[in-house]
Image (cartoon, rainbow, N blue to C red; front, side):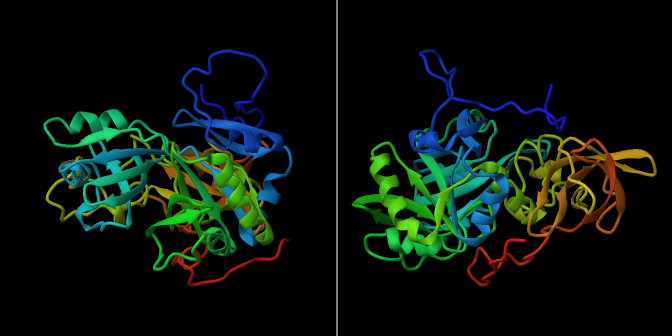
Amino acid sequence: MRSSDGRTRDLVTSMPGAGWDYSLSRHPYHEIERPKGPHYCVYNRRQMACCFDDHSTEDGYWLLRQKAAVLHTGEYPLQFEGPDAERLLDRLFTKDISKVKVGRCGYGLACYEDGSLIVDGVLLRLEQDKFWYAQADGDFYSWARAHAAGMDVQISDPDVFVSQVQGPNALKVLEAASDYGMPDPFGYFAIARVSFGGQEVVITRTGYTNELGWEYYTEPHHDAEALWAHLDAAGKPFGMEIFGLDAMNIRRIEAGILNAGSDFNDTTTPYDAGLGRFVDEDKTDFIGKSALKSMSREPRLHGLKCLTGEPLISGAVELAGQRIGTVTAGATSPYLGFGIGYALLDTAQYGPGSHVMVGCRDGSMQEAELVQLPFYDKLAEIPRGKLVDIPERK
């Protein structure tokens, strides 16, 4: 049975002694996080810190909004290499992958044959016939292997780990850390190779926060301890610290960023989840295209604004005493000063402006309004560097 009763939570902890971790993987910075008192969730069979004993979730949120925050993620890069790599990926994803140029990233959204969603992630085109797909939590490797039959493409696990550096000072950290200064050009969704303390590292102008930021990819040949020491020294003057997923979760809800497996899954189409803009309907073909042609374009997922409570994940969404949907994400925004979340409705009958009752963390039902996403920065100008918005802590 899934949790989220608002009272208990199951997370991974470390303990002394030998034993079998049953296929769980630690990221390369596990020992660096250990003194902070991390508590981990399992994501792609990898441990990802949700929170730390040395600071609160709210402290982490303001670190992200005001300075620079680092999350060592559980995203799982897969490598696609060979003459048919582009052809396979174009079949697997709803976007036209041929338009992603070398040195650029794209958004990869994958569907089943019936048009329901599998997973999403960031696709990196490192070379003409070599890609990394940094996927969210989900079953994708075997799906890709099955559809690669007869193609000249190798799908492998490069044992790469993704870390995010996000916040208004993130690019200042990058400039200080790079041995040769800021990469140029390095626009939104760009890829660069930079030298950090003599180690060449792949970085991307991406993130899961809608803050200014970038991500770096730790490969097996890297000296991870030396790499972190170099980045940590560069980031300290700008207030950079490690933080957890719980703090990032608040910001991603504000930004309207969805989580695979909870905000959308195999019961939703891209249109249901409000992701229709990532479906290239004029593409020759992709898995799920035929089914999607007959699907409703109206979204069933909307933002929740609750002035008197914090929406509870899995809580009921009701109208006139009848359940019409479920809360898929919930938090209290320190910046906005009220409860926020997402509601996945059973039908597309109701939308922004509708007033509903939602199950909240304290066990009560509170009035909320369905709103359009994101909650602010509608044009995503902050992560593109077009808007500087550093709020004061309330």
